[in-house]
Length: 111
Image (cartoon, rainbow, N blue to C red; front, top):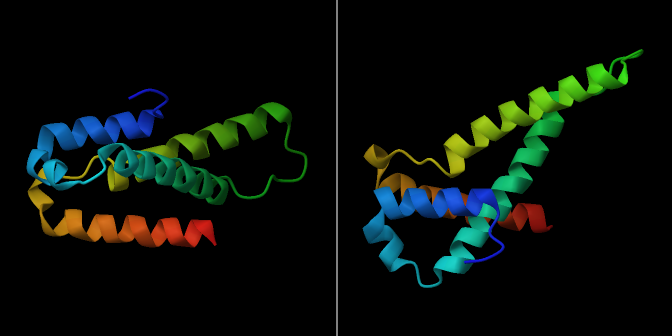
């Protein structure tokens, strides 16, 4: 699978390791993981923007970079735990819920 974003790759590895039965039921794995990867990236961007907030008056370039970098890292941590690193103990109900949430979020982002 070429041109996968890192979130796609991480999700696929996680599913291969912890959810092989659920993975076997996915009819189009490349599309499935591409959707998860794209949604993860979009969600991280939106969350990072929210966390970073508005630049304070007088903020320097270095301060803005630090604020944005910190927001991005925090957003990435939160979103990856939620969308990629699903706890195997929560299956199968959480997987079904997550897939429904992914579909809903994708629709929201598309509109």
